Length: 405
Image (cartoon, rainbow, N blue to C red; front, side):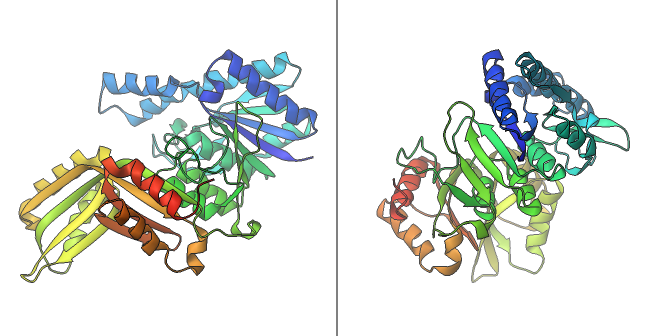
């Protein structure tokens, strides 16, 4: 007997037939003798509509009231899933975030989980009941206000609940049947990975892979929660996200990820003096503009060109902040380019193998793709290229590293 958390995303509960399918999958695990807790998202499209209503009423809406509105999608789904389970003979009860409780900080709209009281849920599960818990939401206890965890937060809810319940596994059911070496829509020969390490999955998620939310992978790695990615619609083996020690053969490269949500900013002829980087990036950080790739070229005349990337949605804010500080910073011109893409090669085998970066650079050069910016970590190499070359770059690198099935 195992204790399992089963999480179902918005497409998995998109209509009543799909909710019945979810109930049948849960019943199968219960009938096998497992203790099961379920975490669900709002029905597909619901959260987008709720967010739009808030933005249409007021672009600068109160984040606390925003959370009250957008958390309602999951309340509907947990009730419907509990009813569907009861209809096929499974004892079930719905739980909102505040009822568990899932305690968070007070950063409304992007709250962080601070703790989960799992004792009552464990007691119910041991008695044969299936708790159906609302993903994406929690409560900050200082003011007893509902909070939400940010988009994709139901993955985080599921992993946090699995850690609190000391579950053997957290199964994430979605509209894909696992983690692939790259996007199968771009490379039909992409292979599904049987196992992938937390670190690799974290890098892939952070550079554009949409399979799991980045914060959920961080928490899974920290708490040692084994995560399995499965399809809601097909009975196929999924992909396990596990500790590196559970992977026998460590591939040099496990996957190729891409992100089109990037924009490049260059400050021309910035005075080259101590503290200039702090004066550039400090105000951006204060405005919650995340800076990613950075490159700096030093000129012979005491000036420097500084290039960095931000999220495409943050580009107008970054431009506004830097232009207002132009006199203080002393740069000659600000040049921006939103038509760029970040392409990343990820693999734990990079730690012990040389030549990974040179293979990347050679493969892109052979396709006539110019590299604008480069950044590296222990198990990742990322480059910035013109967005028109995204698919060509991904296909070329997938072949260059021998990942084609």
